[in-house]
Length: 92
Image 1 (cartoon, rainbow, N blue to C red):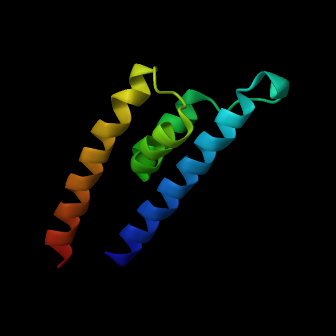
Image 2 (cartoon, one colour):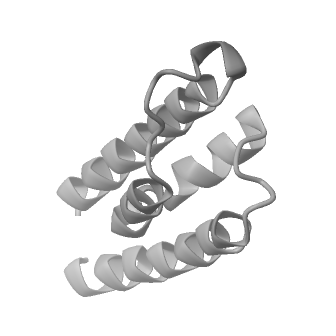
């Protein structure tokens, strides 16, 4: 159980950082730098980092108008919560 919590923590912090990097790179001054693909951001969210992505969306005002992010991250958070609760019940 502790390993699962550490994994989710790492994934959430990773996605929060990736969202910040992508937001920084989205500015016109850094237009020459490559952005982080949306597919990668959503993938990290699906693998456990959705809460970090959702928090990053609000903190940095990034990807808030994209339906895949605005609806996807909250749904992923609910799924992750259900998995975490089920794992706790099964392992406890």
